[in-house]
Image (cartoon, rainbow, N blue to C red; front, side, top):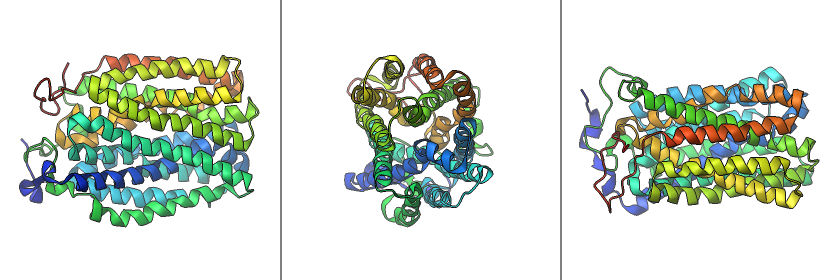
Length: 426
């Protein structure tokens, strides 16, 4: 039995909102997501400098990501459901204040336990951004364009990492303290106040293609529906794909700055340039894979993982100089962006009232990746970073294989009528 609560029963449709209003909301989400990505990726980009200041071992430095990932898992599970129940715009505002505040508090940590706690709480808030953002934009736009909408959001994320790399270069060239990069957290705290002016209230709006009865089942937690007999196998497989993605990403990208500094002998400025190349590739690649997902289906983008796996081997073992290495990093980043279609895909695989809870599966994969830095850190200490980072190539291939075994959701309107959301095409 389903029900609609309060204002939603008499809500207007997303289709009735002007294109300008929906694009303004998308622009706001892109900025908020850009700032979230900056906050999240400080754990990787600034890892060698955090480790040096606090005198951490490789394993301890890697555990900072584990703490952040654990927080993200908890935040995705808890806040994704709260967003579906009490409003995604409200959840968005709370999360922006939370992650901005926790990023700024990173300037005060002075010990290993303190930085672990700070990263855990930062992860709690940042881990909520993906499901909340997907739930909002999936309700505002038609399925035939959601891949490209997702590419704008994810492009803003990759842009943030590229900007973080360039900013770190400027900081080190000017002899500034790297902690200045954490004060960016003040921006989302202030920006959160503007959300009611730009983002439509999802509690009072019928999502695109939805109906007034698309509310959660009475007496059930949203997460419980994802493990009902109808969806259980699909949910487990999606968690595996996400988990392998995070593990592989952490095994390669998470150690990239450390590899460049300790193995390749790059200067701090050169490391910043290389990071910028990698994530500039992801930013541009996301638009390509978003188009692929809208044109050929969500599963077609899985080929990007196979390509990323091959480029990892070139990056680590081919006799190439710094310039070519950066070009390979650009290509790897572009291929890695194939996961841009996961937001629309997850939202379409389940009923509309579960959009944010379903999208939170993206972060459930952190169950798998939680131990990645600890395991890879120990492997790196025993066998070297190159061996550790090679593991990512194998895991990306495994993720692509599972991805291809899952249902397709896209059915273009020029070939057939779209199926109801939550009824994937197999």
